[in-house]
Image (cartoon, rainbow, N blue to C red; front, side):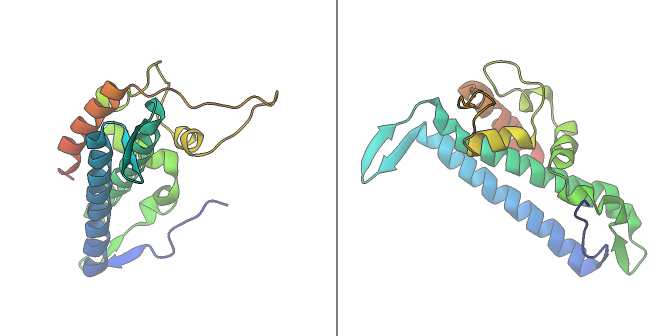
Length: 172
């Protein structure tokens, strides 16, 4: 059974706090993504700079996908539910299940963004999804016992995607 919102009727104050919290989380995620991009792949360990291979982008991509999800949730709350206010409550029934659906939130966010925000890998990838984030964060093996490696991130593409995303996301 899919997880649903525990409460779907929010007062103006609760609705405003939810929107503010979502915007705040996206802002913090963007700050963290920028910090990783500015490090240009340098990870500091005991005061020594260690250049990592392209895998350092795992952090950027996972944070980027999470930021996209939060924007998707923000769009659902603001665009889908803003007209449900009855003078006392906002009705979130329309999004009670999708609020927790990772891929739906990504899809909603990506609908608002240009194609450049979706194309971040060296080889073309069909779509950004929760599976990509999981492949980046978790080690796994296939049926033969071979390690499943995540798709290689194109550094220039992820930087460009984030630049466009950041410029657009503050309009919500």
